[in-house]
Picture 1 (cartoon, one colour):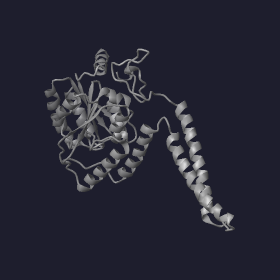
Picture 2 (cartoon, one colour):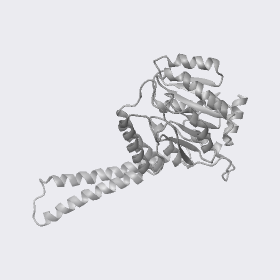
Picture 3 (spheres, helix red, strand yellow):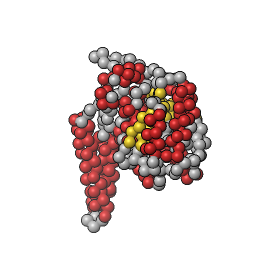
Picture 4 (cartoon, one colour):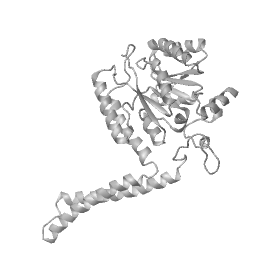
Length: 345
């Protein structure tokens, strides 16, 4: 417990004294031993304390036995085992809660991410960045995945304003305060840079090597694209309209009401000139649009009341060491979804 307290104090000071590597995996048995060996060489070479946290997301191929063997002979390694496959966001969240050091690296366990790129990411984050994302400019993936990724990143960048090339990359380096202030759930791991940028963290990016998949098969299918679109809408609501939902629902309501009013106004002019409008579908469409518009406005007002009454965290982020008027530092900020100190011991 004393060591954990020391590590937390070091983390809050922003020091790069230690490195935690979080490795979410699902059915990656063939690559785990090589991944461990290469990571060990890289992390030992850094000259800093380190740890590796393997998060087994319900593997069924014997990955767990390999991980347990590694943990038995290497005290730097620990493991988390899920009862079933809960997804990458859940695995990252569990791994982040277990970390002890000031800098956290997340990467996939399939060895497409190159462990030897970690020192360059550490150099980048030491330049003052809070989160460094990898850009796999020359991705070794099928062309279908390449084009889908390019369109996804382009659309996400335009929609969110976060100008990095590979938002969805799982190979990232974080300062500890980033993972303490961001709650990763659902499939929100794709948008960690967006959530971090909204909190005011400084986002950086470096080009990294990317290797072809030598083991297993990709876990991503066509269904992830539709889910990613809905997650993007969620992120936009959480970052732009989390505290002002009426701004989005009210605007939609006014637009719909105005369109319906214009349609019925046009029909009313015809009625004044003795045109029969009772059986025209446009009349019903205009009335429907006005009713739905009013409902959207009232829905936005209800959402505002819910947002006001359920506020449980500050909608800002404080730089470590800076004090507010009450003398409290960033350590006092509410951390939704993160554990208390005693819960990780």
